[in-house]
Image 1 (tube, rainbow, N blue to C red):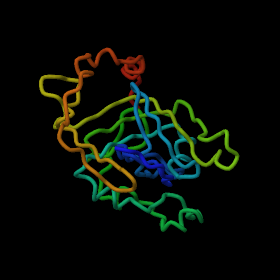
Image 2 (cartoon, one colour; image 1 turned 60 degrees about the vertical axis):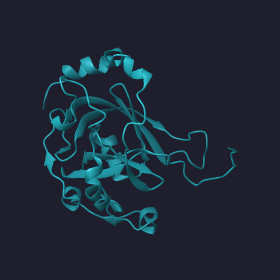
Image 3 (tube, rainbow, N blue to C red; image 1 turned 90 degrees about the vertical axis):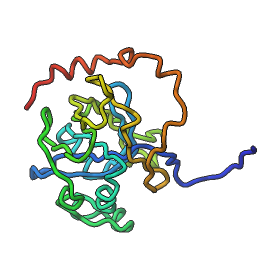
Length: 225
């Protein structure tokens, strides 16, 4: 099979959808879908437009909740598409069809529940919710004057992880069953669900305890609010 050189406008090959809840200046909750995210240990790396309401809230408060929807929640997630918590709506977003929506939870039909260590609420319907604080913010494309300042890469440290019992691995207290967990995936602006396991991985012979980070111990000692 030969390759053909192409120049796609986006390189969005597939990442999990995250609903990020933050707190607005007036104390109300903002909820925004995104999917430029990945995790290493108990750290999350998030890529978002610097002028978005979510990033503004993150920089102001230093707190958020990373809610991971299952593929069954795709209608709720899609109801948040093309909405923004910023008022007025920026010209850039207005051009793309965004509208101001102050009640994100109501619009999505999702239920806010109190967090333990941060102010933003968790999403009750999401099988995974992770309370987090901002550790450091990096500019993306800082080497390019045309791009720098437009996108921020935010490193967030997880303080609490909450999951539905339906995705816990039987016989364990702290493991997720990958056969039960069905994350919602975004690939090239479309929603997808995972298929069945393709093959057992040799990496699974390594105990997950080998990947335990000091952040987990630190999280255990983080007091509740």
